[in-house]
Length: 345
Ligand code: CP3
Image (cartoon, rainbow, N blue to C red; front, side, top):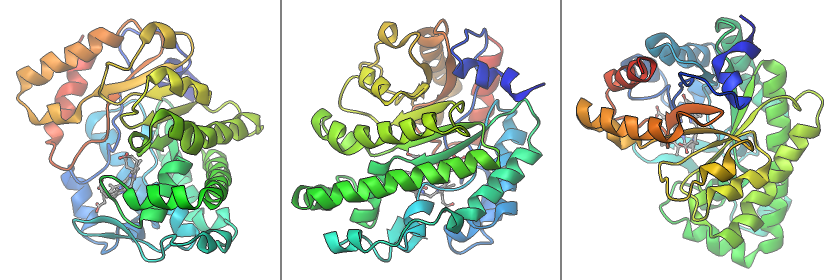
């Protein structure tokens, strides 16, 4: 079968399908014993991401375990800040920590030029995964949104409110925009290389969309996502590649996300801001079961799953996914359970 005939690409092309394609954000990760067995061999998570053979094995683990309809590159969104020399490390129980975060506007003007070849380990992983996958399972390449990458790079770590970043931006508006511009160009070059290496689809993760009100979102996030997508749509090599945009819990209507010109929206689990009749025909939709439901018993899971399927089953271009990533506390049997349940409808 040609990759373009796969149900995942057909759904991205807004086709109505009886059974939706299924994949899960963070489908490779600590909830799987197979993952933990490999993870144990590396002290630093990024060292593991820098090994293309290991990344290939990790990306295939959920495909083999659950027979999913799409594969996602095994890597992380913070490879770009790392390539800018910000020294990204993942500390046990703390998440990412930057050894050289952006502290002043000078740090932004003095950033080295982004060299996409510094991330050749990622393109090798893409090539290996694509070569190992059967042709009916497309491979998703990805990056963080410029705003999300800037937030981590300025804050220097994960945070609930990113107050330090918000203050920095207020006090250094021009430099903040310069930084977002640099990140946008880096994301474009990075994604182009991933597509060249074999990625069939691109997902952009705006994981910190929830920090901004609509006005701030226009200014600091949407503006750069639009630029990034325009660059991809204008480039011969990437113009035909479907683009999925994930925004975590935006404070405004999902309709706004269509301004990005992405082909598909990956929905957070809130449904009150989703206007299906507006979105229909404009974008494919992906989502959006609350991953926390997977900690409940099977009857409750089934009821909540049916609610999601009832909302989206007739939508032209529907992809089943969660509203955010699988967390380490989820039992892999539950992923198998819902995957089989969806296919038995
Ligand atoms: O199957 C997959 O999706 C795996 C590939 C993948 C990872 N990270 C591996 C990972 C992808 C697509 C990501 C994206 C990512 N990374 C995002 C966007 C998605 C989202 O969740 O909103 C973000 C914000 C990050 C940044 C990041 N990476 C954080 C905050 C952390 C630590 C906390 C956490 O959630 O685990 C990571 C580490 C990380 N990235 C792990 C994995 C498997 C766990 C690391 C470990 O095993 O120690």
